[in-house]
Length: 198
Image (cartoon, rainbow, N blue to C red; front, top):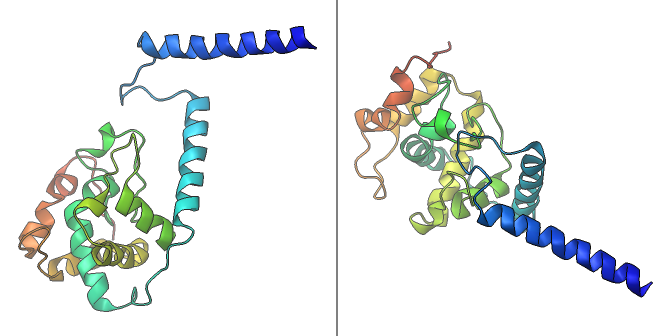
């Protein structure tokens, strides 16, 4: 029994040292243009999803997410900060998106859980392009983005452009007239990968 335990500890130590040597020697390709192994993707996906679920579970969703003023503020925030990566109705790609790994979800086509979306926007996600907006935006502003995200998947391109054009000025982003708002994702609207629906 003692010899078996020693042998198992030896194997475990050898495995740990092997993994460390693999990392230290730089053998793993960290390039964003080189996908992870399937096992790595599965492990990271599980870890990310379980972490978000756990940390978001106790978040209280405000009662005013259907308030048109809150939604309108969120529209401006989304167009200025999110559309380049997460797209908009009628936009199929952007200049930055092809180089992102993992690919961010297209939020114009996906419905998100409000608590989880709040946690992700506020805290970001390690080792991805998702920043922690909580450093520069208060909770009320983040909730306005969630209010808008709840409406986004059902919007047509024309409805999206209209609500963004009406979005109020915001101290975090400066003046937001319709030209400034559209400029935030102008590359997405002009490139060859763009297809406008509707």
